[in-house]
Image 1 (cartoon, rainbow, N blue to C red):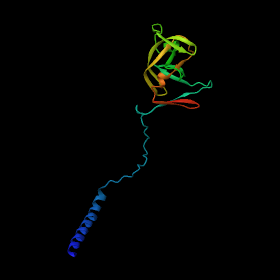
Image 2: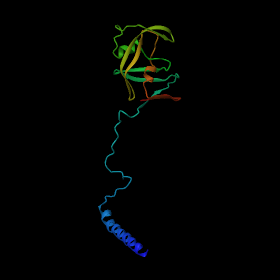
Image 3: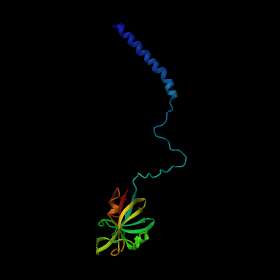
Image 4: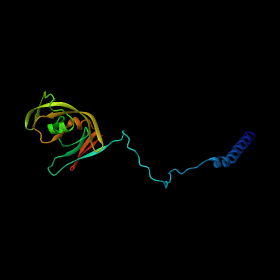
Length: 175
């Protein structure tokens, strides 16, 4: 039995000596770096916003109790009353002209129900609407001949967002 133990102890001792001998060479060849990098003294670099990051905008509540949004629509500035009860973006004739719609050639084949009653409307697609970095393209809208004092930002816009939250002072939209 002793004959079996002596070779095992000798083998273990040789392995331990090999590890000790290699330890010095391994440690010297490693380029150890701290787990947390120290801040560099160079100018800070700002991250670019990826098109895949969520963008948010705030549609403010004004003193009249309504939520309002100022948007760039096809390059023109349009002020919208946010209306979650409106199925689509509803444009006044004035704002439709401002964004490039030829209202004289617009076919008014839709019968739209508004707070003022039924009116005729024409369907259009807004090429691009942007509110503080939140951008949607090809959004369905209607142009009303009459019955609107302000254009309405309706559900054809809000439903295309990632989400939106109502707070006491604003509606926060997420894309």
